[in-house]
Length: 87
Image (cartoon, rainbow, N blue to C red):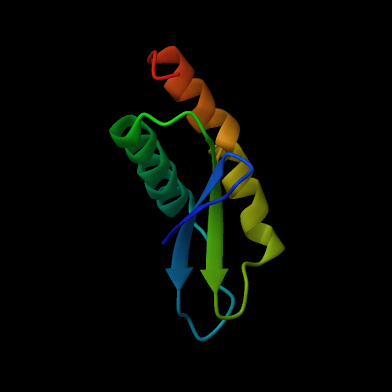
């Protein structure tokens, strides 16, 4: 699901139904990052991108280092768009 906000940010929402807190592995974090890259390249829009995980029981804090190491943030997508000449 995409949420195009008035503050020039688009939330890219990933939904997961799981019967316990959903852990994000390094390989799945790479998949999420690639989704953001593909979206940025395909749309060529000049907005910030924010990954939003919607889960039944949340994401354990132990997943946080995996997410930060793969740079899942709007900065990565913004830098990608700017370096590719999209903005």
